[in-house]
Amino acid sequence: KWFDSTNYWRQAYTLLWGIQNMKKLGNLSPGSWKKAVAVRWPVECRWRSKKTVVKTLQGHSGVVTCLRKSRNILVTGSDDGSLIYWSLSSDPSLERKHSEEDLTRTEGFATNNGRPRIELMQQHHKQTRADLVSRRLHGHGGPVWCCAIDRDAVVSGSYDKTVKVWNLSSGKCVRTLRGHTLWVSCVGFSYDSGRIISGSWDSSIRVWNSDVGQQIASFPTLEGNSKYCLDWNKKSGILATGSRNHEVQYWDINTISLIRTFSGHQNVVQSVWNGELCRHLVTGGDDKVLKIWDPSSSTCSMTLEGHTSTVMGVQSDGDYRVVSCSYDKTIKIWDLRMGTSSSSTATAWAQWSGKQSHNESSACIGTLEAHSEAVFCVQFDGNRIYSGSADKSAKIFQFS
Image (tube, rainbow, N blue to C red; front, side, top):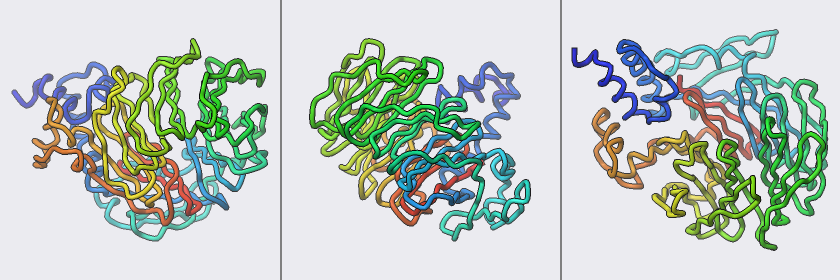
C-alpha cells in the first residue's frame, strides 16, 4: 500500500524531474503517478547513459549557425544565406517510441512519399543523409546568424544588417526591417504582441512592430558593446542580453529600461537562456564556462566547467537540466542537482542511481560527440536534443 500511495509516486516524480515537470501533468490518480514514473524512468536512463538514436539533417552548404524548433517544425539558418524549414512530422522515426533493442542497433526504413532511405544509428556511427526539407527560404544578402519562430512565422537576422519576417506556409519573405548598421546577431519574436527584438554588433537593441515593419523603440545601450545573444521571456516581459563587455543585462521590455547587470564572465557572453518563471538564468561564453544566476540578486550560484572552448549555446528546462554546445565539437548534458547538496532534490538522483558525489564538476552527466566540427546552436525537449554545427549538418538526438 505504501508503494501505491499517491504521495509516494508524486513525490518521486517531483524529486527526480522537478516541480515544473510535475506541474505539467496536473492532478493524477495514484496509479497514473506510478505509471508516469515508469514511463519517464527509461527515458531518463537513456539521457544519462547517452543511449540515443541520432538523425542527421543535411541540406545546408555552409555552417548551421542557428535553429529553432516549434511543434513538428524545425527551422535552421546558415552562413550559406538561407534558412530551411524541416517538417519533422513527415518522418515516422520522430513519432514512434524506441524499445531498448532499437537503441542498440542500426535500423533503416523508407520514409513517407518515396523519400530517400534513412538510417538511424547510435552516436559515433557514420550518419546518412536525411532529407526532410519542406521549404528553403532565400532572400538574405549574407550569412544568417539568428532566427526565432512563433506559430507559422519565422524571423531571421543576418550579416546583411537586416531582419526578415517569413511566412512558413508560403515560404515568402513578407517584411524586411532595416536600421541596424552592423550585422544582426540575435532576435526574439512574439506573434501575439506583434513585436520583434533584435540585437546587433552595432551595440543596439531595437524593438520593431512586426505587422508594419517599423522600429518602435531602442534600448539605452553603450557604444562599442556589441550584442551577441538575447532571450526574451514573453510572460514576464524580461529580456536578457549578452555582450562583448563580458556582462549579462536584464531589461524591462515594457518600460525599455535596464533592471540589473550580471557580472562574472571573464570574456564575451555568447549564449543566454532566460526561463519563463525566472527561476534561474543560464549563460555561456568565450571563457568556456556556463554560469547559473539568481535573477533576483544578480549573484552567480554555480559555475559549470567542462567545455574546452567557447560555449555557443545553452538551454535549461527551468528546473535542473541544462544542455550546452561548444566550439569544442561537443554537446554536454548537465544536472544542476548533482552540483549542489543544498536542497532536498540534490540527493534524489543519487539515492535512486547510487551516485553520491555533489560538486560542480559532477554536474555534467553526459557528453555527446556526434558532430565533426564546432557546434553553434542547441535546443532540447523531454525526449530530444536538436543541434547545428560547422560540419554543415543539423542533428536530432532521440532518447525516447
